[in-house]
Image 1 (tube, one colour):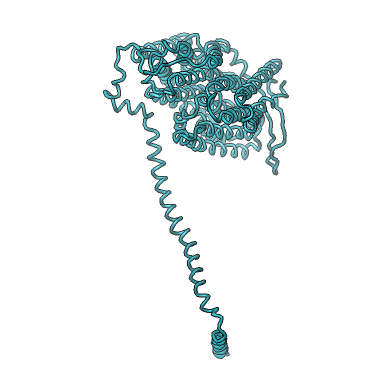
Image 2: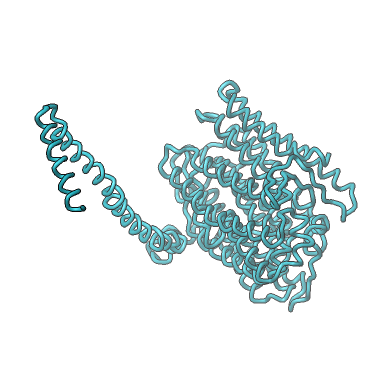
Length: 624
């Protein structure tokens, strides 16, 4: 089975091609074909996993060469796929959760006139993400990386007739390109210093030969790419606007594909980051700042999808935070768990929008559990899992990352992460209570989505409940920790001021307190939360506008850029175009003089000949 790994990305690619060229003939079957092929890719990934498990731990790395790609002098790169514990873990997430999102999208997009194009792009998105996680060298990885960016542009702007969607697509594409350009420079530097881009070389014997300065430069450039793709501070501004795309796209971007790519890159290249030391600290700081910033921003959002978008940024921040502490298994456990409960909540929000005529404003919801009890159950499972309530998946993932900060002697980081964990439970309980509890605030007759759209949600809900328990306590050598050990190595855990049990108890207590606080504020009816913007307009404005980072970027970039643009326009119009136009005008004037010389009369030609001969004789006389 290991040698058939190429079929895993080939299947969604075939689905994309079929929908692109035969979509109109397929009709409604286009969505089912796309779903079936991603589901088949998941089944193949399970087979590859079982085959991989038969090998000893130190031999669980298998490369499959597809073809020679580039050979130019000393630079040579093959198109090669890699099967190891890390790549197969990501592959299972991408294909498994991706197939469920495809299944949901069949019902959600059933009445869209361009449904075949949608599923072609969705399949292509999965293909490029699989190429990214299965790559055996940095160039193939970069191919998948750029392909994911392209597909996000196409899918965020799928409803391009809406100006907001078209603008959001361009914003995502341009913002992530900043990080991608830095990442490409890092890959070039890596080849210059290591002489190869193959993982076995640059993350193996050559990594030890890098100077600390080279390792730092390469790692920070790679991190810039990860920050852009995973929407971390400061390249995060594209993520909330990306909610303009169809809800299944939001779920796929946030749960199974694009934003997880940065976490995967850091974990995959952890050897380079550890060789630097400084870069690993930067990863930790970026993750912690992003987690706290996005948590506060999420609390201020009234659009349910934007609130979930900032919650994704916060959760990805915790993954970066874990990787910065060298707790790679913890980062991956949170990534897997997050894929389940975040996809569950996004798709459930799609049910809410479906039942409320595309309404997304939390202030116009309320009491939906009476009309949509099944969807309310799904969202509650996802929200409580993210909050870290035991025994749901988020408890085993996020809470153990927070505890690890103290156990590794990072007490200040633990305090800040604990605050972030409290805010996480608060910001996710808020949309739960605003949408499904309290008084009804929408006169529309809310109704449940068709039962066919609940099937994938049931599977995601099961994953949100069981993923953490099945994969085990990563901090204590659980199943995922042991499986990833050949790639990530063994993590040395020290002893903090508090025991592990005490740290977990504190995290759970904070989560319960946050959920209770959210209920008191937004569901009990005892707090006039609707009056908060009037009572505290400045604070409400800061939270709702995510601390005005977009306005800051507009001031720093847009205004100066517009000024430079005006100068360049003036230069183009008056200097470049002016010079060209002046030449054209001179030619025109010369052409108008030509008829005066070519009159057609013999006497004119004779006079010209006589004057010319006289001038020539005069010239010769003066010379000699």
